[in-house]
Image (cartoon, rainbow, N blue to C red):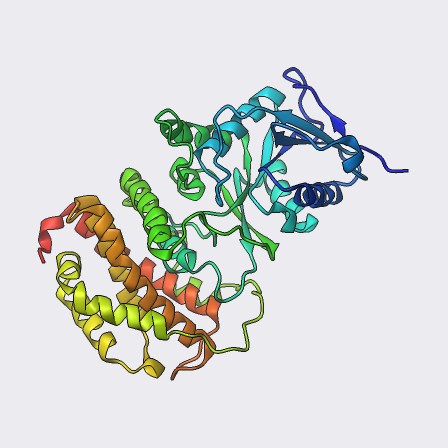
Length: 412
């Protein structure tokens, strides 16, 4: 006979037995059932509070979930059902933690049913056991997945904040009460301005607060498709939010130092296994066409942002045959840093600036895919290349700090 889960009333005077509350995003009926099954399997025999926005499934639909206590709640800030965790999600989660006197939270984003029970438990334990204030998942993605993260978010975050979580904008997180309070404070600045869908950058918040961060192996995960319909819009959305957050935290990351040697880190990094590469060679020709077209049409805009050495490197790239197309890690690191600087200084309209970054990103992507596939003159495993790229960002951090403090030293 099937057992049913318990629907709990707000327990403002009683903490959850494990101190943990799990907060789920809106899911389809089948997706919700799978997610609940995985949560139950992750915490067998333990009473766990699971918060669901607005409603819970009918009792006859919830099977084998006797250890879960489902909490229907009305979000304090309306959520947009975004493909990432947003300001509203963090504000709502903090309210739940306060209402139920939890000591830790596991916040799961869209498509959370694809996370294995082992990953859910590992994320929660990193925080519940007091090892970290923030636990981020280290997904095992395919070599062609998450490339905006690999090209910009991860190496920049690692270099500037001296911390190594592989996915700074992860769609699932576990965090302590004080981390939840910190994230809610950052989120409230946006929700108060009716910007509920704004991005929050948990790793940067934790690093600048001096909190401990754990990067937890999480296996494979189905990532929800972005809201943006095209790459140009998506990159402008993510990079714009990221660059603005870096601007706001500049006083911290300019002083932050690495706790390890970049060279030693590059030599001894343990690379998590990724999904196997596709047998089909990457189709990079459209990316190269976009890059070369942009070189012809956007050269004047790029010259307002990039120094002569970078422009010379781009010129050489524009003349390379596809088979040997290879963007040096040092060139890409310098390009990203110069765009961060131009965003801060408003060298040109920020919308135009971020649009001018897209073809450069496509050039890097083509180079990375060629390098990882072995179709070019060099071959390097995708994760090893990303680690080498992050080391290049670390080595070039003094350039960004110097230009940030004395921008007039270089005037294109």
